Length: 76
Length: 346
Image 1: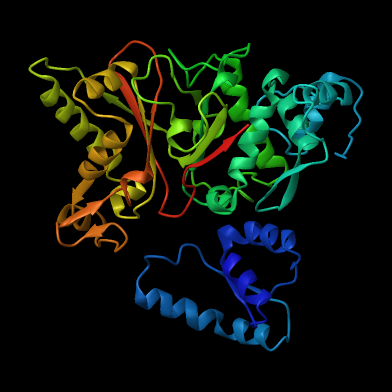
Image 2 (image 1 turned 45 degrees about the horizontal axis):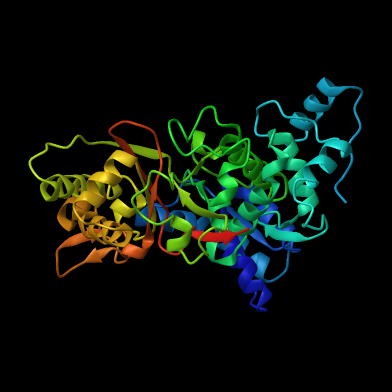
């Protein structure tokens, strides 16, 4: 979430990918930095160390939500 | 001005503070305006409106007044109020990268080491037997006051601002004074650039302490010193620590006066102890690969075929504290660049 906030401040379109276990922390970070509506997409937890096939499945599942958020179609 | 909350009596106020998430889970002293004023009187040179730091992740402003309220809650002795303000300044130094310390899944606590004449003001900071607690009021409440600031100004509530997987007792408090009178070395603060005779606090992000037991064989000062240095180095590079994985960060070594004396008898000063321990704080790269499946570049010395737990000797704090006995402590730290040692004089 922190990296997304930094990029957003530079004007880069951002969707923060936040695992579900860190969703509340992401909300706190975004709110504290004045970006409560920064687009976020939830990932399952954990993703690290689950292997390439599992990561690919997660990517396929969340890609539409990422694209939608980047298009500003809805708040993820 | 800090926010005022009303309650019918002391017990109700404590319950309300717990319910608001303003505590560390232990009973607190209710920070009434009179009590906060008495705390502020402990350091009249500090304007209550001064912002000591901005505390992530909530980015709350830790003013002298708000720190006083947290210090009251911690049961902190007003005579040392300037010390706890210095601690807050230290952790809010951008070099300390408090945002990572607060938010990480690591069990990062903040080790506070107090130097200088402020140690001796009653109630004195303990530097001898049992300095890390339980017991010494100045020590335990310094760490506690800091934790409450991290919770209340920083939002460091477990599960939200503080994502430590398990937490640890040192998050409640982890503070000691250096045993300057028993140490064969110059005070830690002086080694870090503070004028002799001035008080200072030094902070470092750490795991809990790992005890190091060592009894001299007595077959020569150099031989005993070498054994002790090797043992300390191996402990700094403990498997499972970030340093032992190759993150190459900082650590702290709190030598008992007995162990410090053994090293001094072999001709070592503080800097040479740090250099010698850093040199020995290694794991074979193949062992790290066996344990973790890979070796991180940060600590990987490919020429020597080892993983170095410390980025340099300067990444190892060496302090002297504790009573009689054959036990020192190693505090493994975080990754390089996260929560390095920061010293603030006061």
